[in-house]
Length: 162
Image (cartoon, rainbow, N blue to C red):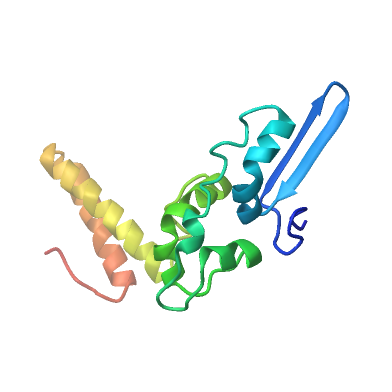
C-alpha cells in the first residue's frame, strides 16, 4: 500500500481508530509521518504516534560500499550488498528479532553430517570433554574422546588421541 500523503513510497505506518462511531485510518511512509505526525496526533486524539518512528535519522545513512540509503531499503525492502547489514544493523535488528525471534543465525539442524555440522558437533563434544575432565569423570571423558576421534576421522583428519 502506498503512502496516502505522497503516493510515492510504501506506507510503513498504519493506524486506525474508531472515535464516537467514526473511523479514522491513515497509512504513511516514514518521511510523511515525520512531516505530519503532529497533525495526525491531533486528528487521532492521542499520543500514539509520538516515538513510533525515529524521524529522518535513519534516512541520512547510506552504505559506503553500494550507496544504498535506508530510504532505498524502506522503498524496496532490499539491501544493496553485505555491507548494508553493518551500516543499518541498528535499524534492522528489531525487525529480524520480531520475524525470527532471535538475531543470531544457527542454521538448520539435521543429521549434521556436513562439514559445518561436524565442526559444530566436534566443538560441543570438546566442551563436554573439558567439563568431564574438570569434574574428574574420567570414564565419561574416555567415551567423549572416542566420539571426538570418530568425528575427526569422518572429517578426514584422522587425528588420534592427542
